[in-house]
Image (cartoon, rainbow, N blue to C red; front, top):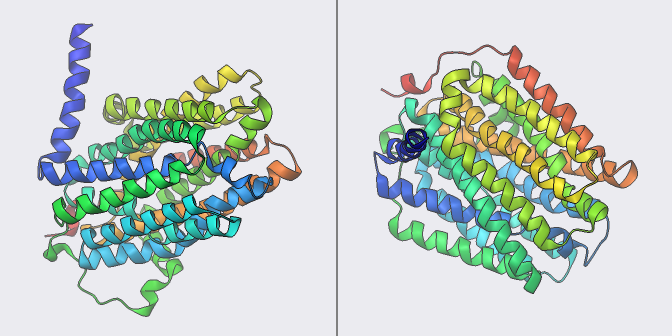
Length: 418
């Protein structure tokens, strides 16, 4: 038992050593920036529905918060990705952090529903900090280190999902607007850290040299260019199906739990904390060894089916305390899906295309965040509160079997730059 525990501890340390070997300070800082950014986003989870209900009691209005953010991000993310491939990650990251701070500040000031929606649009336009930070990590990692690199990204999400909702629930009990102001401060701290301590990760010899053209601002053309690369279209399609289901399920989940169980903000915060703990545990201990046994596609297939099971379990659960193990199951599955699909995508493109890939991936995820919350809100209001979970289950299964039918290809990443 002691030997196994020691091996697990050594494994966790090895992940960070492998990923941070090239520039320990820079990647430690980018991890901290990602962590603080996730805290800033997730801190709003426990209170956003309560804030919107001050102006409207329709579920659709709650989902429009995420839709407005996603719509702005859909058009902006590929452009930011292309810009970062040309000028580097650092300046783009600074702009993103400044926009996030402004958006959170406006959300905290509030005053009307349109102000809340506009704040999410502003944050969405510059909401590329996570994708830019992911490209930064790919820049600094060797091809064989990518799985561990994306595990680092996932661990930032996992830990942030613990800290953010805990702070959001606690601050929300005091004042519903306090979490937004706290998020604005976090974004500004991130920007100051990046200004003074974050070096550029993309050397000039790896940057895209072709000048930007008007067509580069066409999001659909960028998506098409990525989709034509061998093997990438299927992975992007599976990622879309996963995010569609994930957004449909989560966009109305707070309302569902409030309606069925009369839950309070601290209980919603505890639920999201447990989700973060589950993600952090699987990211730290199990992703690398399970991928070594089953491969990225095999792990993602199993976990998509587990997500489907978790969605259906939530529909038929009428005991509040059972929400927590169901959420842990779903979150543990999500903890495997992000690094496996991310690695499958990143290996399909060259270093010069990583920023564009991350931007396109973010854009597609945003598109799913536009469509699925609207559909989920309409189904919730006009059919059944459990309908979004059924919708999610169908899309999880579709993603799993599309991935099963795909064929692996040799990676381009290690051959792309001489």
